[in-house]
Image (cartoon, rainbow, N blue to C red; front, side, top):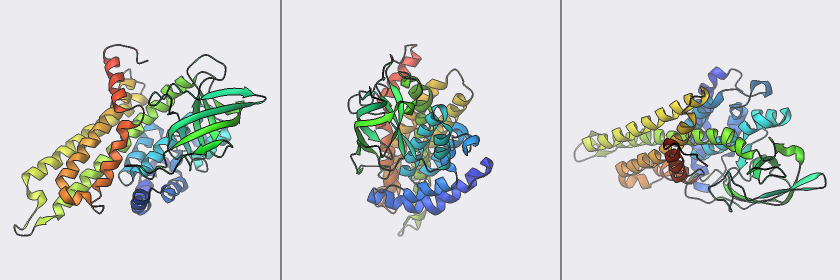
Length: 376
């Protein structure tokens, strides 16, 4: 268990090397939730990266959370995405939940996630079509959530609905994953991030107390855009950067160790191969530097912080695809085999572009921001 936040990276590195890396293969091959990896991170206290020390968290801020997701993604994209969504959820809980829930999320018994995306509004996650209505002393929720990471493994969902009574686009709730009326339509069997347990979830007459409301009625948009979106975009970008960095390392290792027997030379002896690897490195570094600048902008409340938040996910997601395309090309036929490893990162990297806000939507937002137009 981490007791000194300053040494978390050393402990994280040990967990990544000894537990997450070996478990990543089964998570991908079998589409299995990385339970052992999450348990190890929980046992070390790393699920509390964004939680305050007063509730047992590490208080590492966005910079620390991004570093954890990035390092984890170098070994397992699925584990990194589970972490990303947990941190998004805990950030909302930190702002609006009671001490008991905050402590559980910080110390690990409570695995959090967000349930914003819906079949009705698709990637326009800020405009839920699900409903909330009073019935006696309860609130009744009905919804069709299109994708929820950790859907069957999370303790509870940070959940969006239309407002209960107030004006506005949405209201946020804390909904137990075991509540009667909750159905997870899994398991997940996808192209990449195969262990992240991302499945549709429906709510059919789910009852929650009105005290489950996180923030004010009708103010869900503010929670989404002020808390969840910046954290999600930054940590999603951190995941993409980690995948790129792993691809560079694996590609360099493969080309340095693969030889032309009749020539007595390695693939890396070819200038063309080194040129491709250099491009991978440069692209990865550029994405990492934009990520780091985004974190600095957010933490210092710079005037360009929101622009950077929009840019970092779009840039990292697209660049990861470019880097992994090169990795597959350089490693050739061997890249299609599991043991080289780059094909897993190639598949995992594809997810960022379609996770709301999608890359195309982010480019529209960025264009609006640059042109001085309102985003919504």
